[in-house]
Amino acid sequence: MTSSILYLLPVQDYLQLPDPSFFIVRSYYQSFSMGETKLAKPATIKTRFLVISNTHGLESLPDSVLGSHANVAIHCGDLTTESKIEEYKVSIRLLQKVDAHLNLVIAGNHDFTMNTPVFQRKVAESRSHLDPRLVKKVYGSHGDVRMLFGEETGITFLDEGTHQFQLQNGAPLSVYASPYTPSLGDWGFQYHPDHGHNYSIHDVDVVMTHGPPRGVLDHTQSGERAGCSYLFQAIARSRPRLHCFGHIHEGWGGKLITWRRNTSSNPSHLTDIDNENSILIDKLSNVTEKETLQCSTTSHCSGDENPLQWGFQTLFINASIEGMEDFPAQTPWLVDLELRSVL
Image (cartoon, rainbow, N blue to C red; front, top):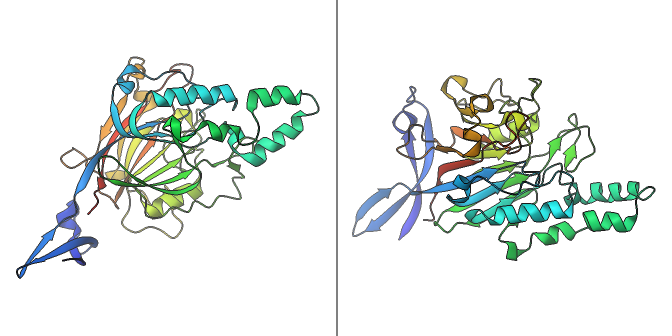
């Protein structure tokens, strides 16, 4: 007979934090056998993620990536440059080369044919100066692109929302996905920066969005921050294990962020990040031309130098592959994290 109980564990013992008065609640399981009571901490399963974004019709990935096995492959959008049917087909062939049990994809702003209202508006606007038959040949009709991502491809296209998966390594995986980014432009899946967007993120392991949160790996070439403050607020409140994205090519990199103990009423990167205890794993200015041909790796499991403390830390990855003039191809990411096992 097994029943769930609550167990109070001092954070000082769990995270080596200085204040023993702060407690966290963890779920433990109590087994009753011939009068004996045993407590066992739920096990975790090491899980590898391959994270890429902004491939824009790229036809190949480095051999070091294609030769590496991942439990989950994640593409954070901008599969294409102009949202043409042929670009999607190239991207599907690229993703099928990846050795992963689960292959997850979202759209980006360049993938506007996935956004029905935007696509219909663009088609209507083109009728005055383009042959409709040519438009259909190049871009397809409504729904054609979605049909390309059939079950037979081995690729799962995610709409906005929360999704649940059971991995082959035995771990359950919860993912929140969203293709939306703030902009004043006329691309797909965009919203006015002043109006914001409702990112309904709750208790999930991974968040995959096309754009970054404001204040994290979101600097543009001009030095301005281009991330979304509404997205940051949702991430700060939910504190997933991993948040991966792209969109801002110059923001490529990885950062293990430690959250402040109490989330503010209006979370901001200026108030809710414990910068002193956060770790910059890599950024674009540290990458050499030789390294762009390989793959960036980081591991935050038990026994590693910086194991991720779930609920207190989030690993952020900007995995934009298409680079700038100096480095036209930026490295994908291989990330090792621990997920909860099925009990």
